[in-house]
Every structure is written in C-alpha cells, then in structure tokens.
Length: 191
Image (cartoon, rainbow, N blue to C red):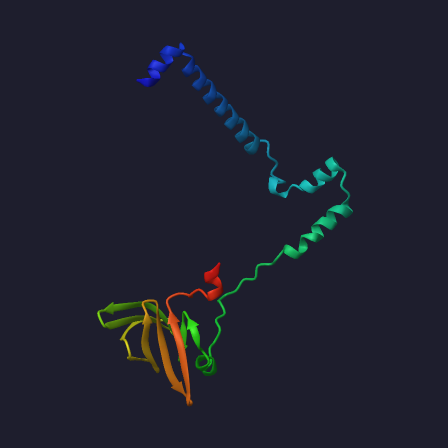
C-alpha cells in the first residue's frame, strides 16, 4: 500500500529506479561470471600469479631490494609440525610428593583431582571432586565430607572455592590448597 502511494506521488519514478538498479546488478553479475568462467585460462589460476613481478615493473624495485624484504620476514615463518598425539608430562612419585601451594589440579597415583564444588549444608560440607585416571582416561566423581579421607589425603574445607589436602609422607607433611580456579595473587589484585 505504501509503495503504491509512493509511486503515485513520485510519478512512477520509484519503480523505474528499482528496475534500473536491478538491471545494473544483473549485468554486473553476468560480466563477472563470464570473466571467470569463459575467459579464465586453465593453465594459471589467480592465486599463482606472481604479483611481485608486476610491482617491480610498476615501481622499479630491484630483485635485490625484494629479496632483502623477504629475508626480513623469514624469522616470522614457521613450519607446522604434525603430531599424532599430544605429549603429556608423566608424573613420578617424587613429583607427586613435592606438590604444594595453591593448585587447580593435584596428581595422586595415576589420577588427577580437580575440585568441582563445595556445598554447605549448615555446619556440614559436601565436596565434589572430579577424578581422572590418566592410564584409562576414565572420569569419575568423588563426594567426600569435611575432615574425611580422599586417597591418602585428609580433606578440610577452607571456603566455597577451595579445600586443603594434607598428608604425611616420610615424616614430612604435604599441604596442598586445591582450588576451583587459579586465585589472583596480591600483585594481580592491585591492578
């Protein structure tokens, strides 16, 4: 309804402009398609054309200058190395025993422990931990309570984002704070 009123007000110019624009678009598409389909040489694709040769002719750049510029970019080139499997670090018992501080994952035997949730029910806490067996790749969920045992560790809830794992190994106490995510350090908090 609006278009009919518009064409009546303008005196029929609006449909003519639309038809002209459509005609020009169709002509451009036909010319573009025919240039690619019929006139393109099957011997050379546009991706294989040596553009640098055209630039040398146009700007008068010597081969020596071009090779100098190409050499300046050689340091930024890299070759993709195909790897069949990602390489994972194998943890030894010594690596396991020296873990300490604030960590997002803890290695115990052949397992990786990740804290998933700390649920508070009044005075009681339920801790949900993801356990991944590194040999089989099997994932499982362990639910423990505050002050209970998990593998060889004693579990103590610190807050809703972290727990403390402690154990005694060879007359030495090992303390690890297992967090859901990496907590910011004091220098990061200031920024």
